[in-house]
Amino acid sequence: MTLQLEVNLKQNVALKMTQEMQQSLQVLQMSAVELQACITEKVSENPLLNIEYQDHQIGFKNIEKLVLLKNQSTSTNSTKLKNEDYTDAQSPANQGIIDIEKYLMEQIPFSNYLSETEHKMLLYYINNLNESGYIDIPLETVAERYDVAVESAEKVLQLLQTFEPVGIGARNLKECLLIQIAQSYSACSLPYQIVEQHLDDLAEGALKKIAGLCGKSKLEIQDAVDYIRTLKPKPLQEIIHEAIEYVIPDIIVNEVGKEWVVSVNRRHIPTVSIDEYYSQMIKECDSKTKEYLKANLKDASILIQGLEQRDKTLYRLARLLVEMQPGFFEKGIAALKPMRLKDAAELLEVHESTISRAIKSKYIQTPCGIFGIQTLFIKGLVNTEGTIDSTFQIKAKIKEIIQSEDSKKPYSDQNLVAILNKENIQISRRTVAKYREELLISNSTKRIRYS
Image (cartoon, rainbow, N blue to C red; front, side, top):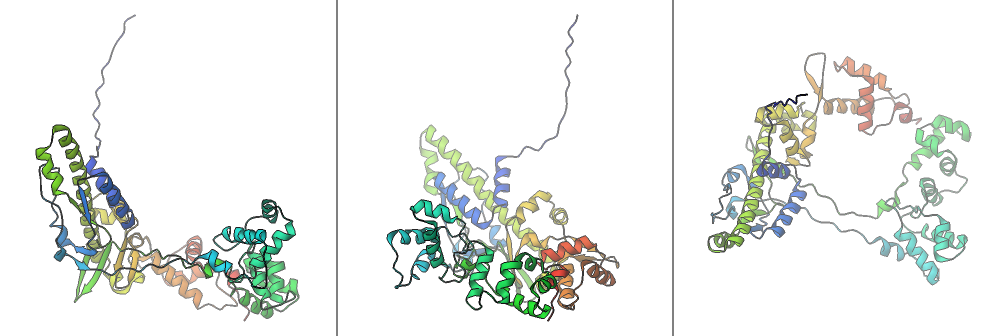
């Protein structure tokens, strides 16, 4: 028996990403908030990095002034931009959050003396309100926790349910609505009856069925339902003023004269530079320290290059959007034309994944408002005339048609298809239903009104 050995050679082509490339891609896909956190973390780890908040925005002419270190470990130059290279940008204000516990506890009636246990139970309920203002904890659990009867736990909960906003402390949507109705109507009223006995039918918009079950006219049911729809299903939202999550635009586009001026917004992103002191130390320190400093200098250089590349990519992309979507910048989202990531990638001569990273969690500020850059890349449908209608245009048309319909005989999705077809928009019933739902518009059955 002979043993034969064979040697097979294969040639594979593979892209090996360098540390610089990986860092650039990571930085590119970060939002402004994520980038802030990343830079802060890097600075805390790397003694060679300095940061400086300039609170300004930077134009592309200034991006080109940035010095690429390219791992020159002996360089003593600090990579910064001068103050005169910036222009001011507006800053959003912060808004505080109301103290829910204090707000509710201050409503305890002076005439209603609470024992220490009842006071603790009330505080426990308040601290366990969910985001809607409901209590999800069974009365039995509270009673057991404080070693009281279930009736005592319910008594304290009923006290909470008398507080503002009306409906606070309810155990479900039905109880929340009934508490609100009871302030204006009796338990025998039609709105109270509809919520208590026919809430599921109300949710389905089955007003004709409710009229038959209640022995009332459709017009009476419609009036009662109109009132019910004015109630607040999430009472806690009435008093919580959450800190507004302001959108930080990464790109700002303004019209100056007859020209569109593009700026990369760096107001909330600090300027990163190399500390000259440590750069000098590399020449004078021992070999071990020099090795440590060189490693940190390389990391600092890679970060700075990633930030520069991010700015350049965003600027180039913004310029392309201005060229390809002039109608959008003049008239807003309704004039947006279909455009794919692939189209932008080919024109900028980069990979499609680069565009995908560049637009992730990024925003563009225009004279028509602030938009997520991702929303500018939309699909479209070819109409009978051979041109392409964007999904925004089609949705706007669907909304317009529904707003002008007869409320007693609203259009079905198939009716909408027929109307759109007459306007040269070829679309399926399923797509119409999808767009209608995305517009938060109910189906035809739920849109019926009797007054």
